[in-house]
Length: 192
Image (cartoon, rainbow, N blue to C red; front, top):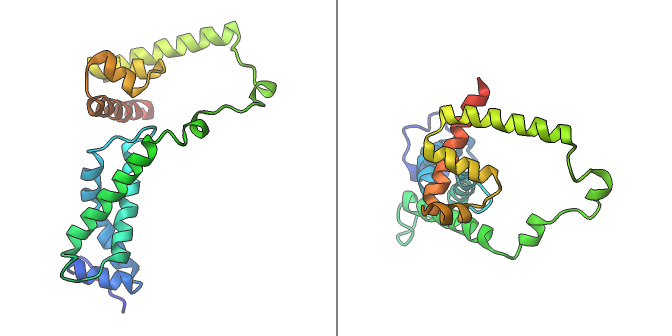
């Protein structure tokens, strides 16, 4: 059964239609619950990732909720079920990223890299890089707050979020938020 107007339907009706193959119903549910996914994602930090990665994981959880929801007394409303599925998916992603198990794969360097790429830049390249970095810092100081500027400079110098937290005495969430705000501001700056 296909429908044309999904905006006036209840969630449970849309789920039934989506499970029956109606793409518009699925899309409507994904749009309706996007804010829920975003708000849940903001409460977490993904090692080696960004908030957008967590939103993507949350959307996968929402999509799974649409496919797995069964209207029974023990499941409750679709909204409750979707919340649980999204939350669990995000938590699983955070736990997986924090595991040390995959660290060698994520931080390894090719043994052949030295054969094809020179490891150290020439003096001319160093001067150009230094000038580029100075110019970027000037532009950043005009757009970012003092705290954001300080965090981004430490981040650019290769410090991890944990090291930045230890140096500044701020929480991991505070550092991550500053980095994410700075990225958005700098993207706008670079688009000009």
